[in-house]
Image 1 (tube, rainbow, N blue to C red):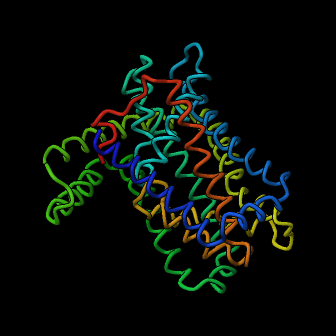
Image 2 (cartoon, rainbow, N blue to C red):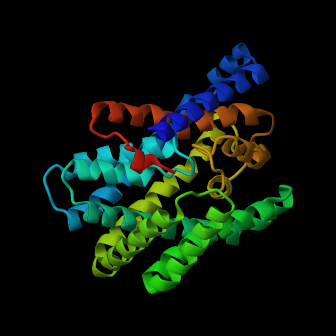
Length: 341
């Protein structure tokens, strides 16, 4: 519970800093004036894109659940699980609370823990596959464009690529070779123990090894449900396409139209990759800084207001809406072992 309160406090402090920055930078009256000048039609499309992002995430969960756990009211449960994941993913570092909170919510409704883990693992792997697809496409077609215009873009790209490829290779190694995966994880755990970042190394190793065993068994389900996974991948492609399009809608709301959709979507792909390396709830600081550096190419003098609108729509709106589901679904509360980082 202490970790949960700490994460919420970090989010609240970051929110205060976030709003204070814009008020002191632009002035409250200037901000209101600039916000009023935006084309509400394009802002509406940006909000719709966020709603579609949540909807497609729900469809991914629903698609997997109806194949592995056919029960009544699965769609409404999928909505609840998705929004629970949105909320706790937003208030925990690296979004680490998303899957554990969903796992807890699933088991609270009577779903077996092992099956719940299988569903979330399959969803996670589909997410990684689609994320890598978008990253590869952005690198192939737009890397040179951004590398020429943004200082140190190459190094930030390498960092993001290494993190994403590392996660993907780890997942593949767990599927192919459990012993290799355990060796790698144990080495990392021991290293973290030596530099005093992680405590109680033995229990952590046992817990991780159990998770790897479960991951390996569950990953095999993918091969048995190719059709299900194909449908989920399509939803995931649609999900991230709508999310990566949000900055373009914001861009058009300012009356700009000289930059094409694909370029701005690629910018959001790169920004999302960079944000994965920021170990704070919602990638606070890194998200704002990354947006300013990358999207300043397009918004110029309007970048600060564009950043405000983008962050409000993609992050704070998610917290506000998903928190309503938490209040409406009171049994979903993270225990110490769920939110422990």
